Length: 185
Image (cartoon, rainbow, N blue to C red; front, side):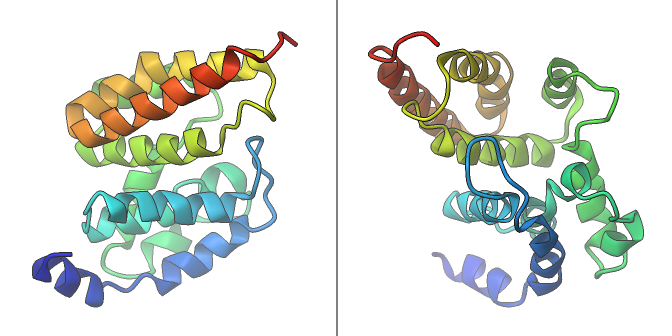
């Protein structure tokens, strides 16, 4: 870690965002685990790629909060600190609207999303793909998820981070390879 990264991270206050994210504990994920661990994993992926932007990191910790928890008010995030409004806005940018189809949601981020939204969505998908085990999930779900990733997420990654693109392609190849021996459901 470079000295500038270390200094930036040393002064970043993340605890209030982590506290808000603990509401996701116990929220089951279809790919296994819970939403809280997924949020922390997404955060860790961003750190691993040397992202130190405080708004991006704070938003990663709470990126699923408004989709999965009913009683969260925007003010709960906006008033946390000076990054609260920007973190909230980024979370809303990567939050799927109730009337929005999955394809429309991903297309929106791909075509009109900010660079930060695309980076966050890529880290989110790396976390999801890491948890997508071919020996647990049905073939149709995995094939749909892989196709969705190829259509929407890989183009996002190509716009924002070639290393994330490389990692996702690698994971996709491993998942597709694991599917070859799996019988159809």
